[in-house]
Length: 223
Image 1 (cartoon, rainbow, N blue to C red):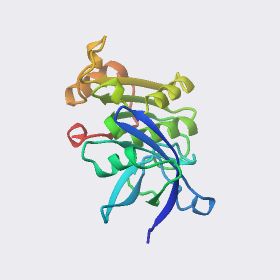
Image 2 (cartoon, rainbow, N blue to C red; image 1 turned 30 degrees about the vertical axis):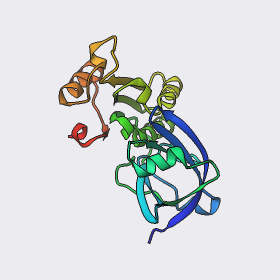
Image 3 (cartoon, rainbow, N blue to C red; image 1 turned 120 degrees about the vertical axis):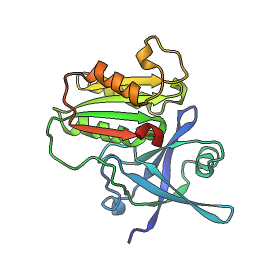
Image 4 (spheres, one colour; image 1 turned 120 degrees about the horizontal axis):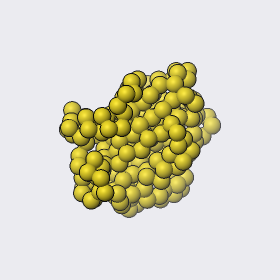
């Protein structure tokens, strides 16, 4: 049966105007237990006002990378997000359970697939791990990411995404869609609804057969 383990916070940084990144040190003795498939998440438990509070956060690290990193969106009234933003410090510890979840990349050999990802808001967190792992482990793979946010300053992992683009310029497409920031081209404005997804796919992926599609975000976007 899975149990919680105490992991030390080794880094904490601002990831967007309303989001932070937290790095967790995993001792060598727990590396096997915390090995993960890209896309999986970590159950985390804290105690607030005498009550245990449990949340799950997706891992944003590529496969095999340590420490484990998660992205936390800070929502007004969100107990864990506000605790993590205001009270949690480097050197503190968190009770963390080993990775879980069925939304993940399979541990398969390189096969040169074309992957497409649609993410909105913090939904980028598991897809970042999947995308980085795919591009790193398979020199023939390609990935097109369509990432929706309200504004650029609420866009998580933007530096990581541009770093991946610089590393794999021929194999990675990055397309941002903003619902509130004005864009030079209309196709980059709006929300990732059915019409926008069809428009983006036709404009940027026409003629390509999609082998794998990854979708993560609010329920309304997923539907």
